[in-house]
Amino acid sequence: MPPKKKTTTKKTSASKKTEEPVLEQPKPMYHSSSSKQPTVGRSYLVLIIVIAMGLTAAYLLIKGVSVTKSSIEQPAEPQLDTKEQLEAHVDSLIDRVKRHILVNEEESPYVATISNIDLVRSRNPIFYKDAKNGDKVLIWSDKALVYSPELDKLVAVTTAFPPD
Image (cartoon, rainbow, N blue to C red):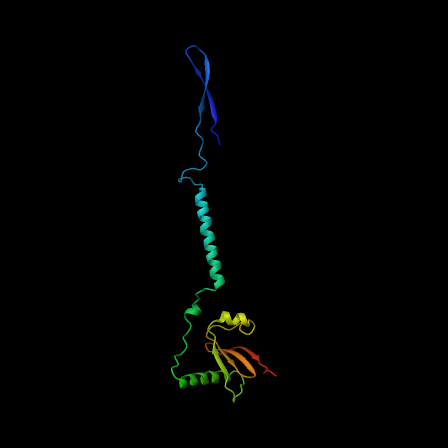
């Protein structure tokens, strides 16, 4: 914005009036840092910080990074060093499951531990909807189930039909 011109009148000895232009200093658009109004630079800095925080939160939500109390305090699997220990552990697990459902005594089930519930749930959300990390999956020729050793309950059960 061009400076404003202000004219003043000056009297000379000969009583003639002459006009001389006097330039006024332009007023600053933004006040000093002691002012209560934020400057444009500060506004942009705050906006950049808010956007960065939002992008970080979105990234963490998409990647599924979270720390919860249950994931930290989850009991570790027992250390099974020998084949006999592993068989004893599986037999104990099957005995606990037998208290809740009838199973084929002549068949040995496939046994697995859920270690990544998000991956498993993405493949079969209905069956694994109430399951969590650490639960056991047992599969016989006629049924499959999810068992929670922590709760001593069956979390999900489905029938399986052998292929023709």
